[in-house]
Length: 294
Image 1: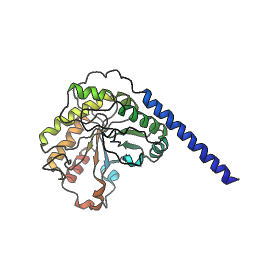
Image 2: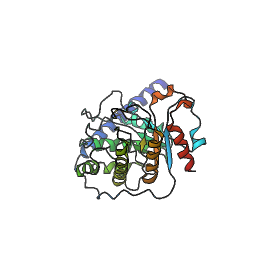
Image 3: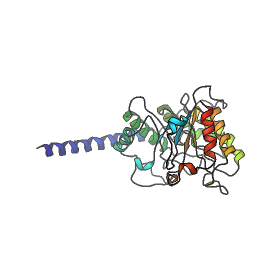
Image 4: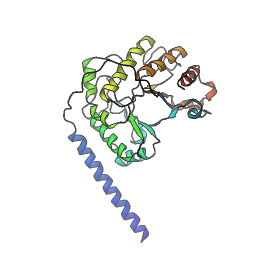
């Protein structure tokens, strides 16, 4: 008899989950209508004086206690594998939703601060967003937020805004980001991606300021924590994979300090094969910067 009861419970639970997923899919379909435009973009302005937070997802072997020694705060990043079994490339047209149970499971495993990284719903262009993408993100945000413990905060990686380097400030880029206003209302924080995408370091400051300002326009009042990677992105043809020079890295940190509410320092998971003491010189700049905040 106990086994039969457990099987009945499992069957009922599956039926409820299927119903919830069907309702969620209809919610996405119903949400595809036009959104009202967002207010015009304010000029980028420095962040008011206050606490500047360094979040970290730094993956090296033998790492010290970064929170105790340098005041850095751990950030949990949920990659697509937390939500989907299949792998997809951005812009391939698959806007199917993850099962609610997967979203809830991710939320319940999250610490105080977490970031959702679903990149399949991006488009290849840095100036495009399919009409199905924003409602899909909103659905994940609603289910995830409902499942979080009270007081836990979350956002989405490189989604508010859709990252742009070549079209910053142009009206069509802003119109694309206007579609994310509903998501901006749901998240607690924004995580623009400010990786070094090109070899020319002098393009980075304007790119950073514009994307931070756009995040604050789309999600007004929500703190902004750009992702920084101390290595040149694969798009940077001549420098890809190289550590960012210490003085350039420090400039990135200082610009974020001026205009954002903090940063996320991120490294590839494969760096776990490298011992912490062998981190390139950008690390010492990070330590000096962190200490300057105290």
